[in-house]
Length: 253
Ligand code: IPE
Ligand code: IPE
Ligand code: MG
Image 1: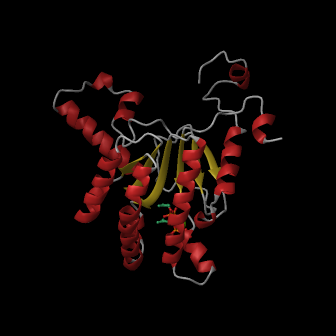
Image 2: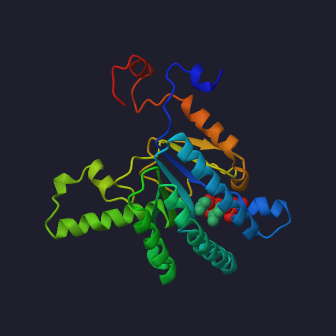
């Protein structure tokens, strides 16, 4: 019997999954190999998880690929990550397009090379009408940066007179964030054993179910993915209500 059928108030399939793909460096170091080997193995894991999401009918998959803090790494590793990012885009965009996947990027792109920014925009335009899955890649992304850029745009609109102070509500703030048009994540997964958010989505994770695993990202396969989904389906999401309210369906969640 699965966790899903055991639970009388089992969750549906998550619509939006957000993942911190951590543990690439340790995966390589365990094999006495340079960290970049782990990052390359991590790209394979990305392909695998994207396939799992398409198969399971997940609508949005958001992957943390490079944080605003990752610039603090040794220059050689940052450069390798940038070229791996470029090569992966060149290799994958057509394949994603053929699989009907819409590609999106969130984060401050201005720090990237012209050619990388161009490739990112090209990938987004080429895949913009695809419908099987929205794949969001967070690059040079930070949750605090996202909130700051939202606040700056809110202030701009107030100063120009197009927004009144009384209109500033939670849904309005959401509209100014990077994933305004997408639902908040239902399930958050972090591989690699650390139990922290590391400045990933801050506003959007307010009611997300958290799942932490010690599995290193390059080892995160279909079974590991299914374990995370199983865990999610066995949980009761209450959004502040009582369990009875949820069970008796006297409230809409
Ligand atoms: C995650 O793996 C990938 C990036 C942050 C780009 P790490 O490189 O952080 O791997 P560990 O945590 O050092 O093992
Ligand atoms: C978080 O991983 C960022 C990405 C996976 C891209 P890190 O490995 O950089 O996180 P911390 O700094 O150890 O928390
Ligand atoms: Mg790490």
